[in-house]
Amino acid sequence: MPIMYFIGVTTASSSINSVFPRWGEELGLSGATLVGMDFKPHDDPSRYREAVTRIKRDPDSHGALVTTHKMDLYAACHDLFDHIDPLAQSMGEIGSIYKRDGQLCGRAVDPENSGKALAAFLPENHWQLTGGETAACILGAGGASVALSWHLLTWCTDPQNRPAKLVVSDINPERLDHMRAFHSTLNSDLPVEYQLSANAEDNDALVNALPAGSLVVNATGLGKDAPGSPLTDNVSFPQGGYVWEFNYRGNLVHLDQARSQKATRSLHIEDGWTYFIHGWSSVIADVFDISIPSSGTVFDRLSAIAGQARK
Image (cartoon, rainbow, N blue to C red; front, side, top):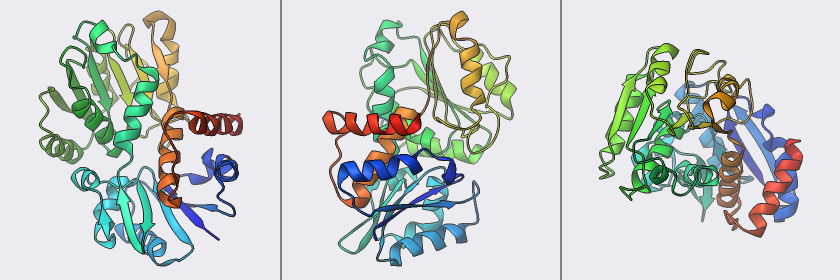
């Protein structure tokens, strides 16, 4: 019986548990089973090593999707892999675990998928239309944030159609240092500000100062992996701004804060559902060695099936 593992924090609460069997039928993955593995954020490295060793040695295991723990799992287990793609190595994270010809492989999927999810709601010429003064602000400097920053720094190369700057905040200086080091390898001239924020009030100050039309992203995990929001209820989102909550489930306080200002600040608000679709479909393609396009008829069908399961 082919097994795919799901390495997360509260895996039983994910919509993928009802989506996966239906996708399996659609994709011809007869008998495939999804098994969740829950870990605390920044768990003991030995637990990550135990999980990866299990996946590597079990002939029924085809691989795994990793969420929340991408950077911690890489740090603890990178030596257990036979092959890790160069981008995953430079980022220090693994989101997809799969096997090829008896070898255990890992790669980073968020850089590509975050760009696809962003393009699904942000107008193609948004930065140009807003006069070149708008910023992209990512709250949190973990793996998902590093991935989105990669997209912004490497894909938004047109100086007339890119944010004026990227602002990244985190409570952990080591994560900011890791991101700064990664960015130094990208040869991008987009200005980046790395802000150490001790509390939500510090993040409020960053968001309050953003120009109209700016993008604000909650990549902290707060609202799903832990309660709360990186902002207080006193924050003022940028007028006409785009607010992206990476999560689609949980006590999404950040999403509620944005919705409370949607009318008064003319906000465009997006949750993490489209990101969820891209993330899971790309890793399932890795794990079962099948082709799943990121657009078109097949992808639209999978999105519709997932939407039905979500309801």
